Image (cartoon, rainbow, N blue to C red; front, top):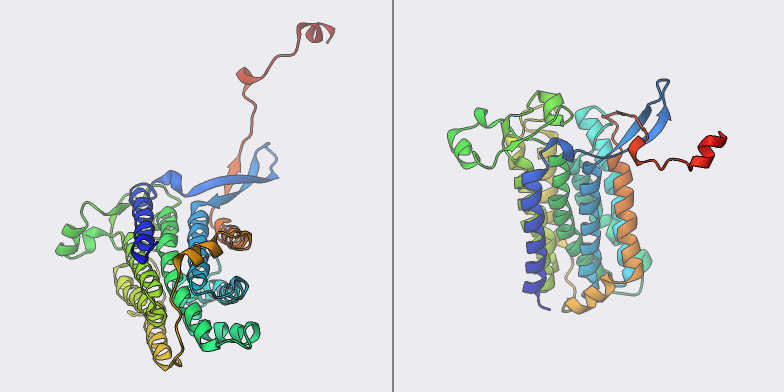
Length: 361
């Protein structure tokens, strides 16, 4: 299996997923996935905890990112346990940062910021990977191993963000400006592709009163741009260019983040240029500089079959499932919506007791 087949299969899967998602997820029913009854109230109903599609799609994005981050280093023979340690160490930085930076910029704890988490990963990622490399592979060529891990993490992140943006469509967050307020060329370009969010629980509705209005599909554009950057990174990695695979997805996604912020209507902090835009710009420059200063190292030829063999092992499957489950629990339990559940029997579907039991009663 060559590089073109791998990238082509991934691109086809993403295209099918996006075609369905862009058409379906702005609908009202695609925000709440399930409700778990938690506390009974005096009227017999239950107070429930909402599980969201936001959590489901973020979990799907995280699962895809981890799978790619393990598969690519596997093609050059890096030990799966070492790669898993690098992935978990970076996630240990990124996931808390996504909530802390959201609090610092937007002023509340009830949300996450991909931009903030990505910035933390761009700054701390190389140092975290290098530290794990020094501990896990003390006798190996650390520069080579760390370079390949960084070359895998960047496209993995880009693909994960591309899929994860579907979560924003389902929840109605990270929304674009109303088409009516946009220049004529934007109105014409997106007239038939605008997002119209349904339901009062969508963030676009309760935060800015934009329910039922035609909005720029910024989430869809971000999903496409990020995924294309990720696919390009995968192709570069499998072609033997890990440094380019690290730099290109980061520069592409962060450049688009800087530009797309001007197209968004949700609150992004104070200032004409938001804190997230400054983070994106600084992160891209930092990544390029770090890449140019990375020491030279021998580069083994990637083998797709070897990477697929690593991917299809119990350890990797459990790792992907564990990260996806954690992401779903962390991001899927809604703290900004509530529910009440009434649970009843369906009389015409209950088997009546035998005649003798009724008579004896």
